[in-house]
Amino acid sequence: MTVLELEKEIQKNERSGESMKGQKVQDAKYIYVNEIYDEHAIGMPYVIIPELVSLFDMTREANGRPRRISSGYRTRGTQDNLKGKFGKAKFSPHTMGAAMDIKTYSEEDAKSLSEIFYESAQRLNLPKPRIGIRKYKGYFIHVDLVFLWFKSHGGGFDYPEDSEPIRINWIPGVSW
Image (cartoon, rainbow, N blue to C red):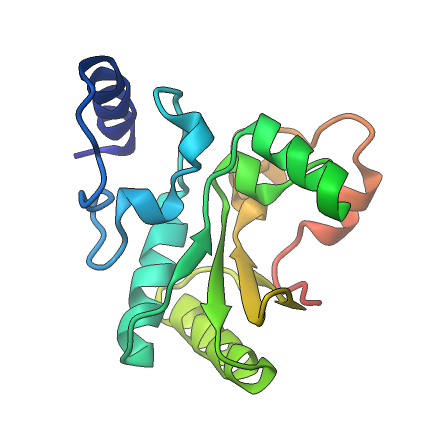
C-alpha cells in the first residue's frame, strides 16, 4: 500500500466507520498507523516521509526493543493547540509528516538512542537527522528529516515565507 493509497483508505474507512488501527504503514516492519496518526486528522490526507519510516524501522531493529512513538503526523489545529499550551513552534515538521517523537526511559537512554538514529541514517545513506531531546513526562527524543521536503535538499518545495529561522535550523544534523 502506498502512502497515497493509505490516505484514500483512511478517508474511505472514516466514512464507513472502520478503523485503520493495527494496520502497518506501507513498507514498514514495525510502525503502525495509530502510532503516527493524529486522531484529529481522521479522514484528512497526510503524508509521512518514507525515509522517516525507514529510519525509525531500522533504529527500532538496531535498538533491539520496542519504543513507543508518542507523536507523528499532527494536523495544523493540533499544532496550534500545542503552540498555545506549550509554546510549540509555528512551523512544525510534525505537520509536514517529517517528524516523530519517541518516549525514552532517561536522558542517557535518549542520548544512546540518538546515536542509533545517526548510525541508522548513515546505513540508509540518509543525511544526518535533526534530533532533539526534551524532558516532558519523562524524556522523549524528537527526530525529523524535514529538510528533505525542500529544494535545497532535493525536495520540491521552497521554504515558507517569513521563515528565516527555518532556513537556518531546518538543515541536516541540527541537534538540541
